[in-house]
Length: 219
Image (cartoon, rainbow, N blue to C red; front, side, top):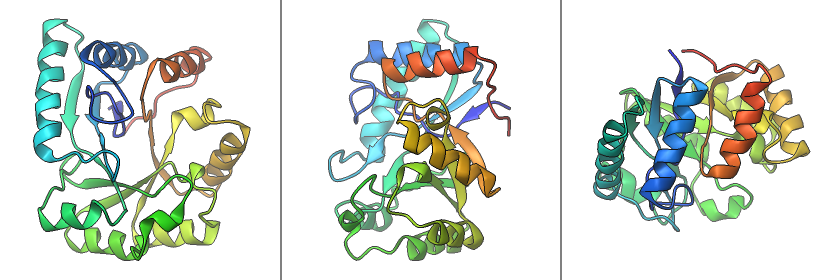
């Protein structure tokens, strides 16, 4: 099945879709590319203090509008949880985990500043999630230039699933990220790919990339 476990298409929750019109444009693009089921994963970070309630309200709105406009895209609800002290402990304390496909938790690191994690140690948190009977997914490691290959391999060996972005392969984030993602793929540790879809620019780049014959991975 053609699944996307990583998208920011819910309206006005984070740095993705800003309104319901944006959301519908993104949903239509996903359908046009061939995705059958998409999990909506708004950030829960220090800048985007989302909760299951705020996510749920936006999700129901988008779900109703997708049905109304007959887009034909199956959407599900979860979040992208950033490992920062402002939100991650609260997520655990209040049981805000919303598993993707009933088993996966999307756990991101800060993109450029690892010091934002404070005392949080990613490997310990991944193991915590595994001990709960769930499986962590680390999104877009190709964008974490501070993350050593040794660290990344240790995460994969511990049972973390690695998810790279289609946009990285398409050059969306620049040449260095594109080179890095291909190197990670060569390691044989990538389990999933995601759109990490945010806005119209992502749609333009990915539409061109898929048009070249690049295909959606099936799971």
